[in-house]
Amino acid sequence: MIDLKAKSAAHGMFPLRLGALSADEAASRPIFSIAPFKGSKVDAALVKALGIGLPDAGASTRKGDVEILWVGRGQYFLIGAAAPKLPAAVTDQSDAWCSVRLAGEEAGAVMARLCPVQLDQLQEGQVVRSLVGHMSAIIVKRSGGFEVMVFRAFAKTLADELRAAMVSVNAQAALPD
Image (cartoon, rainbow, N blue to C red; front, side, top):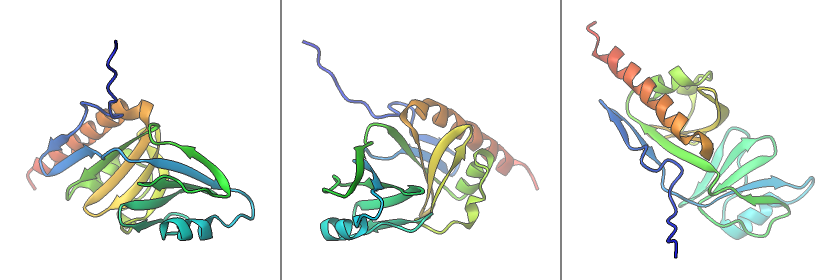
């Protein structure tokens, strides 16, 4: 009999360490996409079930290990908990995404090489839907860096892009003044 073992989206590609920079695959957690039906009371249902509501555009809400990200117009990700019964289109996205945490004093410089959005102005918890390299991504500002989410199929490309940008930033930092 075949013994199948689940592997993470970026199995064996992380951690990446270079100077004071680090990139680590985020721990696996449930992710549910929520697209509220027109005129529905999804926010009230989430507050009642989980104690947190939908965030504003470009933001996130958090209670303990449960977080809701705005990921586009009328689209949210519930992360860290199973979705309660909601008046919305809800799909399990848990295995569809690769999530990587980039940390270090120069994390912003790494992202500046990969993303066309000025991320250094973001406050912790703010969310941007943009490109990282040529990949569609969800970028969340975290304490000390960023969380970058790309489709699972792009995990290797994300690792390669982050590694190249980290090498560039690290080399530039080593140059004499």
